[in-house]
Length: 161
Image (tube, rainbow, N blue to C red):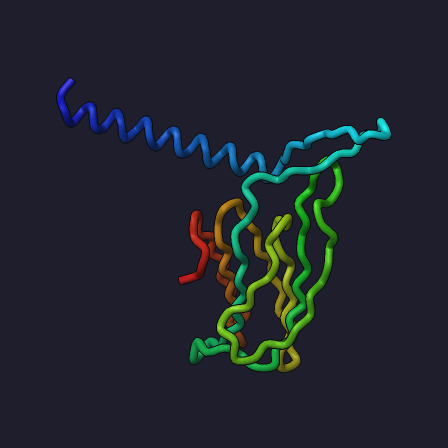
């Protein structure tokens, strides 16, 4: 085996290993395992452990024409909780806020699988969803008035470009 073949074989093995780790991490976040502990009163409690939590989630609402932040849009962001042991790992809540000159809004990603978003602006309503992935940043942008959306998931990142 020459040196080029050895390097190619090493590259392929490394790629397969990293792919297997990524699949394992994703499966753990969508089908988390549980850890059972016993207390002194001999009753049993179950704690859910979710490995591979999603990274940050950022929302942007911008003008089609100028790519600048929209001021005064009302955002209703409802989280979609991850499930653990047959139930939600966190409560489903809806965060309501108005946009201002902020470029990106950071929303809680812990124990969440995604968000359902409704944005109302100038008599129009825009709806879209954004999924979250383990160990990845999710960058969601709504363009007004077209209603176009862009949801980008970047593995291993902590901020949006």
